[in-house]
Length: 250
Image (tube, rainbow, N blue to C red; front, side, top):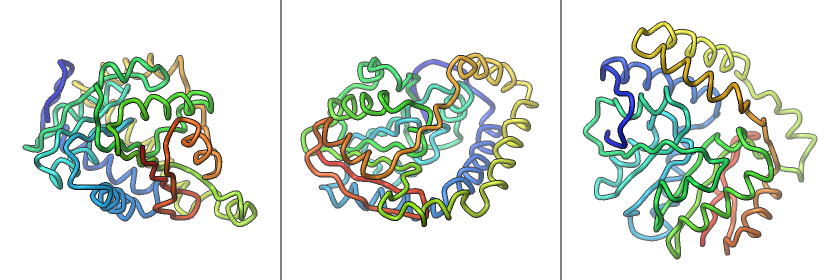
Protein backbone atom coordinates (compact mmCIF):
# COMPACT_ATOMS: atom_id res chain seq x y z
CA UNK A 1 0.00 0.00 0.00
CA UNK A 2 1.04 3.60 -0.44
CA UNK A 3 -0.06 7.02 0.67
CA UNK A 4 0.82 10.29 2.36
CA UNK A 5 3.88 10.39 4.66
CA UNK A 6 3.30 8.93 8.10
CA UNK A 7 4.34 6.20 10.47
CA UNK A 8 5.44 3.01 8.75
CA UNK A 9 5.61 -0.29 10.65
CA UNK A 10 7.33 -3.62 10.22
CA UNK A 11 5.31 -5.28 7.42
CA UNK A 12 5.22 -8.55 9.35
CA UNK A 13 3.59 -6.80 12.31
CA UNK A 14 1.23 -4.94 10.02
CA UNK A 15 0.17 -8.13 8.27
CA UNK A 16 -0.46 -9.93 11.54
CA UNK A 17 -2.49 -7.15 13.16
CA UNK A 18 -4.51 -6.45 10.04
CA UNK A 19 -5.46 -10.13 9.85
CA UNK A 20 -6.57 -10.23 13.47
CA UNK A 21 -8.41 -6.91 13.02
CA UNK A 22 -10.42 -8.50 10.23
CA UNK A 23 -11.36 -11.34 12.59
CA UNK A 24 -12.48 -8.88 15.27
CA UNK A 25 -14.61 -6.93 12.81
CA UNK A 26 -16.24 -10.14 11.60
CA UNK A 27 -17.44 -10.62 15.17
CA UNK A 28 -18.91 -7.13 15.30
CA UNK A 29 -20.72 -7.33 11.97
CA UNK A 30 -22.63 -10.59 11.43
CA UNK A 31 -22.42 -11.61 7.80
CA UNK A 32 -19.52 -9.24 7.07
CA UNK A 33 -18.27 -11.31 4.16
CA UNK A 34 -21.69 -11.25 2.49
CA UNK A 35 -21.90 -7.50 3.12
CA UNK A 36 -18.58 -6.89 1.37
CA UNK A 37 -19.54 -9.06 -1.59
CA UNK A 38 -22.89 -7.28 -1.86
CA UNK A 39 -21.18 -3.90 -1.80
CA UNK A 40 -18.83 -4.87 -4.60
CA UNK A 41 -21.58 -6.40 -6.72
CA UNK A 42 -23.72 -3.29 -6.23
CA UNK A 43 -20.81 -1.10 -7.32
CA UNK A 44 -20.40 -3.18 -10.47
CA UNK A 45 -24.14 -3.18 -11.14
CA UNK A 46 -24.18 0.62 -10.99
CA UNK A 47 -21.93 0.72 -14.06
CA UNK A 48 -18.62 -0.63 -15.27
CA UNK A 49 -15.96 -1.55 -12.69
CA UNK A 50 -15.28 1.68 -10.79
CA UNK A 51 -12.21 3.73 -11.63
CA UNK A 52 -11.98 5.71 -8.39
CA UNK A 53 -13.02 4.33 -4.99
CA UNK A 54 -12.90 5.72 -1.45
CA UNK A 55 -13.42 3.83 1.83
CA UNK A 56 -14.34 6.34 4.56
CA UNK A 57 -13.35 5.28 8.06
CA UNK A 58 -11.72 2.21 6.52
CA UNK A 59 -9.22 1.62 9.33
CA UNK A 60 -6.29 -0.60 8.36
CA UNK A 61 -7.44 -0.84 4.76
CA UNK A 62 -8.54 -4.47 4.69
CA UNK A 63 -11.68 -3.77 2.63
CA UNK A 64 -9.83 -1.21 0.51
CA UNK A 65 -7.19 -3.81 -0.34
CA UNK A 66 -9.86 -6.34 -1.31
CA UNK A 67 -11.50 -3.78 -3.59
CA UNK A 68 -8.12 -2.91 -5.14
CA UNK A 69 -7.55 -6.56 -5.92
CA UNK A 70 -11.05 -6.96 -7.36
CA UNK A 71 -10.66 -3.83 -9.51
CA UNK A 72 -6.92 -3.67 -10.29
CA UNK A 73 -7.32 -0.72 -12.65
CA UNK A 74 -9.07 1.38 -9.99
CA UNK A 75 -7.54 4.10 -7.84
CA UNK A 76 -8.54 3.02 -4.32
CA UNK A 77 -8.12 5.18 -1.21
CA UNK A 78 -8.79 4.58 2.47
CA UNK A 79 -9.43 7.45 4.87
CA UNK A 80 -9.34 7.39 8.66
CA UNK A 81 -8.37 9.52 11.65
CA UNK A 82 -6.91 6.69 13.75
CA UNK A 83 -3.07 6.83 13.69
CA UNK A 84 -2.69 3.16 14.59
CA UNK A 85 -5.01 1.89 11.88
CA UNK A 86 -3.59 4.23 9.26
CA UNK A 87 -0.07 3.02 10.05
CA UNK A 88 -1.24 -0.57 9.60
CA UNK A 89 -2.82 0.34 6.26
CA UNK A 90 0.30 2.19 5.16
CA UNK A 91 2.58 -0.71 6.08
CA UNK A 92 0.54 -3.60 4.72
CA UNK A 93 2.66 -6.29 3.03
CA UNK A 94 0.65 -6.15 -0.17
CA UNK A 95 1.16 -5.38 -3.82
CA UNK A 96 -2.35 -3.92 -4.05
CA UNK A 97 -2.03 -0.14 -4.42
CA UNK A 98 -4.14 1.72 -1.87
CA UNK A 99 -3.70 5.40 -1.00
CA UNK A 100 -4.03 6.31 2.69
CA UNK A 101 -5.55 9.63 3.75
CA UNK A 102 -5.65 11.02 7.29
CA UNK A 103 -8.73 13.16 7.84
CA UNK A 104 -11.57 13.85 10.27
CA UNK A 105 -15.02 13.06 8.91
CA UNK A 106 -16.66 15.43 11.39
CA UNK A 107 -15.26 18.32 9.32
CA UNK A 108 -15.95 19.00 5.65
CA UNK A 109 -12.22 19.59 5.15
CA UNK A 110 -11.84 15.87 4.35
CA UNK A 111 -13.27 16.45 0.87
CA UNK A 112 -10.37 18.72 -0.01
CA UNK A 113 -7.89 16.12 1.15
CA UNK A 114 -9.56 13.24 -0.65
CA UNK A 115 -10.36 14.97 -3.91
CA UNK A 116 -13.50 14.51 -5.98
CA UNK A 117 -15.01 12.55 -8.86
CA UNK A 118 -15.19 9.25 -6.99
CA UNK A 119 -17.25 6.58 -8.70
CA UNK A 120 -17.87 4.69 -5.46
CA UNK A 121 -17.63 5.70 -1.80
CA UNK A 122 -18.24 3.17 0.97
CA UNK A 123 -18.35 3.52 4.72
CA UNK A 124 -18.77 0.57 7.09
CA UNK A 125 -19.34 0.85 10.86
CA UNK A 126 -18.12 4.44 10.95
CA UNK A 127 -21.21 6.59 11.49
CA UNK A 128 -21.58 5.67 15.16
CA UNK A 129 -18.57 7.90 15.90
CA UNK A 130 -20.55 10.94 14.70
CA UNK A 131 -23.59 12.83 15.93
CA UNK A 132 -26.77 13.05 13.85
CA UNK A 133 -26.03 16.54 12.52
CA UNK A 134 -22.52 15.43 11.57
CA UNK A 135 -23.89 12.43 9.68
CA UNK A 136 -26.25 14.72 7.76
CA UNK A 137 -23.33 17.00 6.89
CA UNK A 138 -21.21 14.00 5.92
CA UNK A 139 -23.85 12.82 3.46
CA UNK A 140 -23.81 16.25 1.81
CA UNK A 141 -19.99 16.14 1.67
CA UNK A 142 -20.06 12.68 0.09
CA UNK A 143 -22.57 13.91 -2.48
CA UNK A 144 -20.06 16.61 -3.48
CA UNK A 145 -17.19 14.12 -3.69
CA UNK A 146 -19.00 11.69 -5.99
CA UNK A 147 -18.95 11.94 -9.75
CA UNK A 148 -22.32 12.28 -11.54
CA UNK A 149 -23.87 8.84 -11.44
CA UNK A 150 -21.69 7.88 -8.49
CA UNK A 151 -22.66 5.44 -5.76
CA UNK A 152 -22.50 5.60 -1.96
CA UNK A 153 -22.91 2.46 0.12
CA UNK A 154 -23.24 3.01 3.86
CA UNK A 155 -23.42 0.10 6.30
CA UNK A 156 -23.94 0.35 10.04
CA UNK A 157 -26.39 -0.45 12.79
CA UNK A 158 -29.68 0.52 11.12
CA UNK A 159 -32.65 -1.15 12.78
CA UNK A 160 -35.94 -1.34 10.89
CA UNK A 161 -38.42 0.89 12.71
CA UNK A 162 -41.30 -0.92 11.00
CA UNK A 163 -40.64 -3.90 13.27
CA UNK A 164 -39.19 -2.12 16.28
CA UNK A 165 -40.07 -4.87 18.77
CA UNK A 166 -38.33 -7.52 16.68
CA UNK A 167 -35.29 -5.29 16.21
CA UNK A 168 -35.11 -4.76 19.98
CA UNK A 169 -35.20 -8.53 20.49
CA UNK A 170 -32.07 -8.81 18.33
CA UNK A 171 -30.13 -6.41 20.56
CA UNK A 172 -27.52 -7.34 21.54
CA UNK A 173 -26.61 -9.54 18.61
CA UNK A 174 -25.43 -13.08 19.22
CA UNK A 175 -21.72 -12.97 19.99
CA UNK A 176 -21.71 -9.23 20.78
CA UNK A 177 -20.15 -9.74 24.21
CA UNK A 178 -17.39 -11.91 22.74
CA UNK A 179 -16.78 -9.29 20.06
CA UNK A 180 -16.42 -6.58 22.70
CA UNK A 181 -13.87 -8.68 24.55
CA UNK A 182 -11.97 -9.42 21.35
CA UNK A 183 -11.89 -5.69 20.54
CA UNK A 184 -10.49 -4.81 23.97
CA UNK A 185 -7.94 -7.64 23.77
CA UNK A 186 -6.82 -6.55 20.29
CA UNK A 187 -6.05 -3.03 21.47
CA UNK A 188 -4.35 -4.33 24.60
CA UNK A 189 -2.14 -6.66 22.60
CA UNK A 190 -1.23 -4.12 19.94
CA UNK A 191 -0.22 -1.60 22.61
CA UNK A 192 2.45 -4.05 23.77
CA UNK A 193 4.27 -3.81 20.42
CA UNK A 194 7.11 -1.35 20.96
CA UNK A 195 6.90 0.31 17.54
CA UNK A 196 3.11 0.67 17.79
CA UNK A 197 2.87 1.86 21.41
CA UNK A 198 3.58 5.54 20.58
CA UNK A 199 0.79 5.47 18.03
CA UNK A 200 -1.58 4.00 20.62
CA UNK A 201 -0.75 6.97 22.87
CA UNK A 202 -1.40 9.33 19.96
CA UNK A 203 -4.70 7.59 19.34
CA UNK A 204 -5.70 8.03 22.99
CA UNK A 205 -5.09 11.77 22.63
CA UNK A 206 -7.24 11.91 19.49
CA UNK A 207 -10.20 9.98 20.83
CA UNK A 208 -9.94 11.22 24.40
CA UNK A 209 -11.31 14.52 23.14
CA UNK A 210 -13.98 12.96 20.92
CA UNK A 211 -15.49 9.74 22.26
CA UNK A 212 -17.83 7.84 19.92
CA UNK A 213 -21.29 9.40 19.74
CA UNK A 214 -22.80 5.88 19.62
CA UNK A 215 -25.16 7.16 16.94
CA UNK A 216 -27.78 4.68 15.75
CA UNK A 217 -30.76 5.53 13.56
CA UNK A 218 -33.23 3.44 11.58
CA UNK A 219 -33.06 2.95 7.84
CA UNK A 220 -35.87 5.49 7.36
CA UNK A 221 -33.77 8.22 9.00
CA UNK A 222 -30.78 7.51 6.79
CA UNK A 223 -32.91 7.37 3.66
CA UNK A 224 -34.43 10.75 4.48
CA UNK A 225 -31.05 12.28 5.28
CA UNK A 226 -29.57 10.98 2.03
CA UNK A 227 -32.49 12.39 0.06
CA UNK A 228 -32.05 15.76 1.75
CA UNK A 229 -28.34 15.65 0.83
CA UNK A 230 -29.22 15.40 -2.85
CA UNK A 231 -29.10 11.67 -3.58
CA UNK A 232 -31.75 10.83 -6.14
CA UNK A 233 -32.26 7.12 -5.47
CA UNK A 234 -31.81 5.33 -2.14
CA UNK A 235 -32.52 1.72 -1.27
CA UNK A 236 -31.64 -1.13 1.05
CA UNK A 237 -29.21 -3.65 -0.45
CA UNK A 238 -28.28 -5.80 2.56
CA UNK A 239 -29.48 -6.66 6.05
CA UNK A 240 -28.36 -9.03 8.79
CA UNK A 241 -30.26 -8.51 12.03
CA UNK A 242 -29.92 -4.88 13.09
CA UNK A 243 -27.10 -4.23 10.66
CA UNK A 244 -28.00 -2.94 7.22
CA UNK A 245 -26.50 -1.31 4.14
CA UNK A 246 -28.07 1.40 2.01
CA UNK A 247 -27.08 2.26 -1.53
CA UNK A 248 -27.54 5.85 -2.67
CA UNK A 249 -27.09 7.04 -6.25
CA UNK A 250 -26.32 10.59 -7.35
